[in-house]
Length: 157
Image 1 (tube, one colour):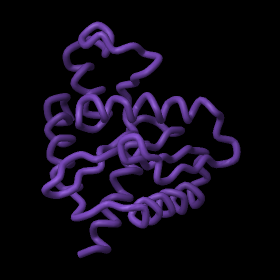
Image 2 (tube, helix red, strand yellow):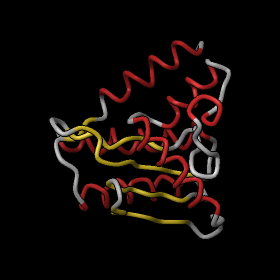
Image 3 (cartoon, helix red, strand yellow):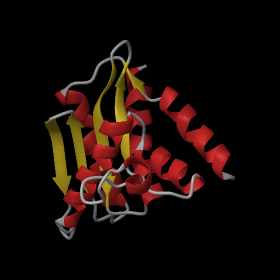
């Protein structure tokens, strides 16, 4: 898949990941769903679900190093800054052959354009936070979050 098709895929994907509401129970369901997938696959990851400035769910598997929490913060900062998935921004920067610092002046210590953080989008409200996973490849982190959101939304219908 070429880079333009990937960008289009990530844009369209967000249009399918819209919640009618999002609260602590939603975060708990999604967080536990991700934990179950990780357990079944022996993933050593960290998971974070936050409304902006309010952490609703956080879990780190035994063996997940503390730097996973730093990756979560940096990925989530990208979502909060650009209001899109961190993998979309990573792909866009790759296409433009640049990075966050050179293009936007955003320091690497606080921002990481790599897959794994997906915005929480609530219908008629907009983006209210992010669901973030760290510990796998950027694509796997991203796909794990997307899979969990889709499962939750399917259950709600």
